[in-house]
Every structure is written in C-alpha cells, then in structure tokens.
Image 1: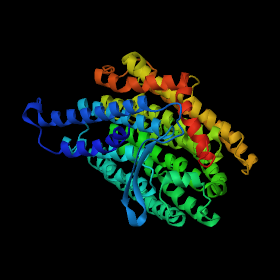
Image 2: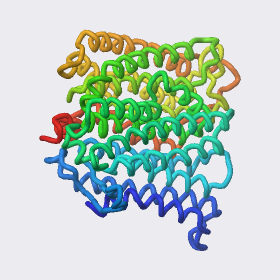
Image 3: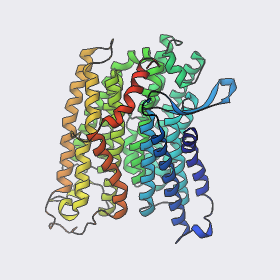
Length: 517
C-alpha cells in the first residue's frame, strides 16, 4: 500500500520523461507519434490500475485513518517532511483523477488535438497528472503548495499550444489569476506553519487550531481561502474559467473541470476546516453568501447563453455551469457540518464525472459540426441529434439531466446534502442567513434545470431531414469506450450513494471533531 501510493504520485513524472525519449524500434508501430500516444495510454492505464489496487487494499472499516503512509524528513531546518497518505476524503478524488487521465489519454490516442509535437502533449499530460495526484496524497503544507503549483505550467501550455481561438489570451489569463492566488495562499500556509511550529497537516488537524491565535486564524483563512477560491473558482474570482474552457482542447476542458477545480475545494476541507476552525467560523457566512450568489449567477449566465440569438458557445455555457455547481460545494463547506461537508465532497465527485462527460460530448459535437455555437448548431429547426445521431443524442441528454440533479443520478445527492447542511449549519453560525442561502441555492436548481433542458431541446430535437447537415457521425468506438465509464459511475453513485458516503463520512466526522473519531 505504501509503495502503491508513492508509485501513483511519482510514476507519471517518470513516464513524462520517457515520453520525450525516442521510441524503441520495436514499439514505434506505424509512426513515432502513434508510439508516444500509446505510451500515454499505457502509463495512465498503469496508474489507474495501481489506484484501483490501492482502493481494494484500503481498509474500508477505518476510512478516517490515514493509510498507505510515507513519512520521510526532507528539509530539517523547516521541519518539512515528505508525508503521503490517504483517507476516505482523498481516496475517491485520487481514483477519479486517475480514471479521467486514462480516459483523456485514450481519447487523445484516436483524436489528438491539433498542435505541435505529440511527445510534448503526452509529457505535459503526465506532468499534470502527477501534480494533481500529489495534491490529493500529500500531508505537508509546503508539499501541498508545490503540488498545487505543479499543475499550472502544463495546463498553460495545453491551452496555449493545443487550444482553439483566443488560446494565448485565455492561457495568460488562467496562469496570471492562479499564480496571483497562489502567492497569497503561500503566505497563509507559511503563517500557519511558522506559528504552529509544524507544516504537517495531520498534526495541525489534531491540534484543531489550539496553537494559533484568533487573529492568525483569520489572516490564514483570508489568504489561503483567496488562493483556493481562485482555483475553485468562486464568484467573483471566476472570470478566468469561461475563457480557459472555451479555448482549451477537449481533454484540457475535461481535466480542468473534472480535476483541477477540485483542488481548490479539497484545500478548504483538508487544511482550513481542521487547522483554522475559529477563522473558518468567522468567514463561513461570507463564504456561504458568495456560494449562493455563484449558484444563481452561473445559472443566469447559462440561461443567457442558451437563449436563441445570443450566439452562446456550448463550451462556455458548460464552464459557467461549473461556477454554479461549485457554488453548492462551497455552500456545503461553509455550513461546517458533517452533512454539508459530505455533500460538498459528493458534489465534487459528481461534478467531475458529469461535467467531464459534458465536455467530452461538446468537444465531439464541435468536431462534427466545426463549431460549438449554439445558434449555429440549432439552426432553424434544431440539430436533431435524436434523429441524426441517436446514441450521441441520448448521451448528451443523459449528461444534461444528470447535471441538473435528477434524483437517482450522482448530481442529486451532493446538492441535496449541501442544502441540508445550510438548513442546519454548525453551532454559532447564523441560521437565518444560511436558510436564505439554502433558499437561493434551491432556486438555483430550478434555473439549472431550465438552461440544460433548453440546450437539450435546441440540440437534440428538431427535424432531422431539414437543413443541409444531414450526415452526422454517431458515437465512434473510442468515444464509447471513453464515455461509458463516466455514465456507469454516475448511475452507480446516484443509486448507491453509500459507496461514497461510507468512505467520506467517518473521515469528515473525525476532521470536524479536531482529529478525534
């Protein structure tokens, strides 16, 4: 178990270096480009297999205990350690990350985005995987920061070199926003570590803020929270997201929504809730307010993009939907209750699966029609995917109803639990304020259903015989292989939520109790 976790974190880096080497003669296949793409599928597949083995070996009777731990002294002067470990909070995120990277590598093998060298593409993809996996596995504040920053450069180049129109501007906006947030976050991490005498996240969670003054906690929550809020992204620090998603290649959008956004909310749960509880309690009402506004704002922006004649880009629409969905995650965290935090973690996983699937579908739709513009796709009578490409239309309709939170699918439970958490927030928080946030969030679910159903009506329905674009390819075999696991897991998590909640709840209970089970 200890070796598996270390292997999962380090192996993508080794695979990235190997991707830049010349392919051995016997493994070139039809071309060196095919060989390096096959290398990417192989490495991410091995990482996924290791993550599954780690999950099977995980002691599910003790999900609140850190397992597969490695603890080695690294920088003695600062008491920084190479400390790795997983519990019921981080394991689902680790497994989902490994799955999404494998599916993206598989998809790219058959549909590589236009751009420079495939070697560079695969190498950057694997560096990105190592950084995201490390973020969910490290238990030291400075290591967390290094892993958090490690993902910025590869994602910047994936957008800037393999993206679409306006990719340079979108890539610069992405990295400037996130770097600025990271600088502020580093100050807060140093503030906690130097004042408490340790950077170890397990020790800080057990101490539960007793070594930190109220002022120190307030400053730490403000600075770290700002950095995490940019990555989440929380309204009004979200403006980099629509541009980045619109310009990014399909797999870049999938990973940005499915994995990178989760790093921000994970930091709230793993660092701020246990290490600075008093500071979080002070800022929780403001976090809840921003979350509630983000839910409605994201939905209204999507409604505006979905309206006929507004030239709404579907990728941009899905990006704005993420602002709303991540608002539910932040609202659950702001409630500071086991119910709300469990809902936030569940919504994190659901959003990764469902929005990842949506970006796969929209990217494939753009490849078929040459545009993601909703008015162009819908035309006079609708794109009529039900008639022209029935399986594609069915997948798109499924992803849309899953995203709107249909009961029985994964999207429902996270949002419902987050709203329940707001209904009865932690002791000391203003219940009238959180009841207001709950009402606003519930209204946001209605707006979400409205814009997603409008998208389904405009894209999937219509007369398949009208218009010149009659020939639309239905789902290809590689698309089916990449998308079906996300559909299956969305159904499984929706019908059997105890699979995920059984992991997260004991760990959340211990986290909020100051390290005591």
